[in-house]
Image 1: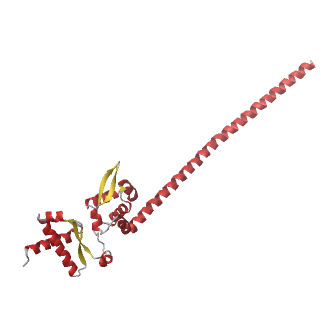
Image 2: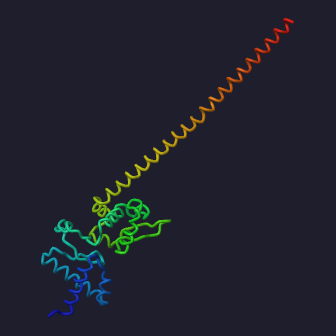
Image 3: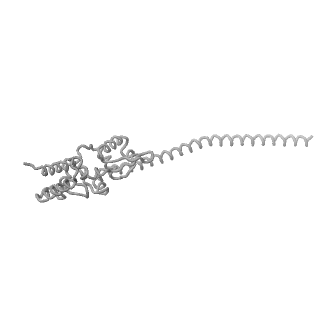
Length: 240
């Protein structure tokens, strides 16, 4: 027969298992309806000892006032071969990877990298509690939450970048290459525009030059004819 104290312990164990993240004693107190937190602490320590004594692949760890069930380090590499985030699609994971790699980062930067479809991804990740949005000028600043680190069993931002580097690095490289391509295309457009303007200018100048030369030659010819007529008249006067 299960005693009341054992039942409390098993309730705590079930919460830790189902939660999948660190949970505080305050939360456990609210969920269990137990105000005396020392009772909860005692049962947590009992569970921790039981898991340790039976050499389970799982262990119960505490970090200050928070507790969770996790896999022993010896088995982590095996567990990570299994996709721990089956509810996340590949495209959402790629957006999350960009945030994890660059965070904290502006939402506008993520959209530029992942296109407008990332608006839906960000909304879904925010709903799941993996990131938060803070107003930042005309955009938002995106930050990873503690739930994200707990869910993926990561210690800090560096661990997150390491985990997601195979996903995020290609995406970031792609956007950087896109920037280079856009710059080169823009530069080429400028050069082509300058060449076209030069061609137009040359086409305008050449006819004007020809007209000027032709007009000059005509004026010079008229001056010579006028001079010759004057000289002829002078000679005629002398002969008279």
